[in-house]
Structures are given as C-alpha cells and as structure tokens.
Length: 276
Image 1 (cartoon, rainbow, N blue to C red):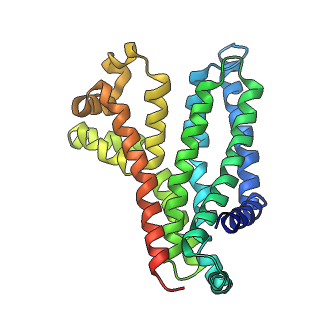
Image 2: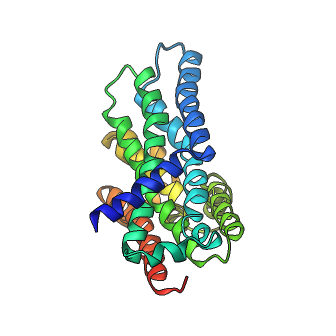
C-alpha cells in the first residue's frame, strides 16, 4: 500500500511543481512579501519592517492569491484524469480509490506548500530583522488555507463533467471569496442595516477572511488592544459579545478546521461512491 501511495504522491508532486500557475505564484508571492513591507518601512523612515507590518501585508495582499493557485490545480485532479481516460487505467491497477485520493491530495498539497515556503519564507528571511517564529506561524495558517481550498477543489473536480467546467467553478469560488464576500464592503452594509453580530456568519462563510482574522487575533492583537473597543472594531466587538474575548480564537480555529474537513470528506466520499 505505502509504495503505491508514495508513487502517486511523487507523480502528483512533480506534475504540480512544474505547473506555470505554481511557478508564477512562487515568484509573485516572493516579490509581494519582499516588496510591500520595504515600501511601507521606507515610507515611515524605518530600516526594516516590523512583524505587524509584515503580517498585515501578507494576509491582505498574498493570502488572496492562495485560492487562485490551489483551486485551479486541485480542480483538475480527478476530472482531468477522466477527460484523458487515464482514471480507468489507474483503477485497473491493484490500487484502491482511497490510495488514489490520498496520493493525489497529498502530492498536490506538498507542491503548493513548497511554493508557499519558498516564495513567502525565503522573502521573510531576507528582510526580517526580528525573530521569524511569528511569521512562520502565518505560513502555517497559509498551509491550512491551502488544505481547505484543495478540499473544495477536489469536491469540484469530482462533481464536474469536464475540466473546463471544473476550472470555471473553481475561479468562481476564488472570485466569491476574494471579491464578493469582502468584509470591507459588507461589514459597512451589515453594520448600517443590521446588528454587527450578523457579520460573524459572513466571516465563517469566507475562509480568506477567517485566516485574516486568525492572524490578527493570534499575532497582532495584544490583551491591551483586546480591551480597547476602538481597536476591536465592529466585528471584534460582535465576536466578544457572542464568544467572549477568550473564545474568539477557538471559534475561528473551529470554523477553519470545518472548512478543511467538510469539503475534504465530502469529496472523498463522492469519489469512492461515484462511477468513473
């Protein structure tokens, strides 16, 4: 079992790591991380960016590109094999669907994780003059977002009729998360028309906003800031009202774990049960 899964992981990793999408993301994320903090730092007359500037810049500028990488690559994982009629040949081998699914998901995830580590990690090591443990926590959050988006991409791939349909649906979800469910615009509307508590479901519905909030409350918000209503903002006050100050991070983590597990389990069950 293990050698067969390892062979699929290796193949998917090599195929994905050579993808133009992934190479482009690595280069773009490197220059976004290394460029934005220095621009801000020099504008403020500082020698190097602080960790807060680096985290804020990464979550606001780099994170929206992650679904744009994971969704298109993952959406072709299953339906692409069906279009090329190679899935039948793969299933004809002495290997189970479980092994195929695990191998494909793991290989693609490792490829995207490598691109994240190279693009974001190397850039951070070059420019940071402070301990990097906090920033690599942000990279860990990026890995979680990648797993969630790959789970969704595999779900799209399993239910789609062809590769073009899968890619179209994947890009729609990226547009939905990055543009349509944008907290900057929606929070203003919800605050004006309804109770700010209604912003919480909007956050839960958008994994991009979830990882931004996790980064903010785990790394930037100090206990002193948490006690300041102005620093918390409308969304922060709403979450404190519902979950308490100590319950915000557990709630955000739980919602993010659900974003990873639900699409992943759903796509796995459908792949096991559906005909090729």
